[in-house]
Length: 290
Image: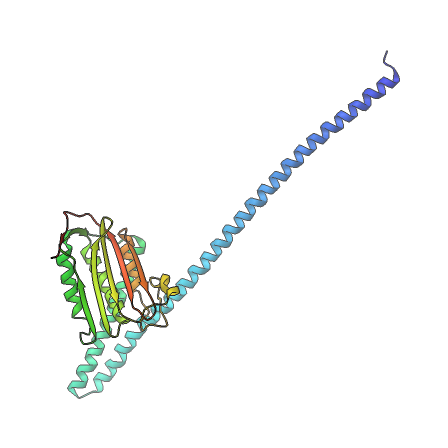
């Protein structure tokens, strides 16, 4: 027979053990709730950060779109206004020499407008991936001399010395000749905008299973902090006479579409060097110019 004292002791022990087990169970459940709450809070925080980043990207995209449309509007209106204005003047003019000057101005602005529209369409194809590249084998050395001669006629020979640095007599590459010509031409003409006098030098060399092409000028140069923005949309440096436009970002898009790289080195007041690198198969070893 169990004594009353023993019965009380067993009851108390059972209550203590039960209370302890209940405590452990509650503690475990509490930790599970706490962990779950913390996980949900962390997920909520990450989601909030993602939403804020998406909102920021959306705002930046909207700002870029607004700036793009605003600048495109300006770019189109400038030659268009000149065409309309001088067309009105030419109908009222009787002097043949004056008519010839007005006609030249109208033709120049027509060409500028057509080039701008072509650049916009070209850029649209690049961004949508619908532009077809057509690489072909050709002698880069001979091609480079031809491009140099074509560009030479477009620069003011009395103020700018145009220099050709062609190191090879033969250099067979596999590239899209049309797009390459477009890029070289745009970079040279961009450099010409910053160079009122002095020189512009173009050259190239074999580098890293490809070809590296550079354009160096003695123009006004670009501030160091502005260098990363040269290939941005409608970049304009206050220390240059360059026009806002699509030239450099279009060059970057064309080069990168072919797996290449672009860059610029410059110092304010000391000229600039723009370079591109394009990967290319090489048919044979290059022959160095004597």
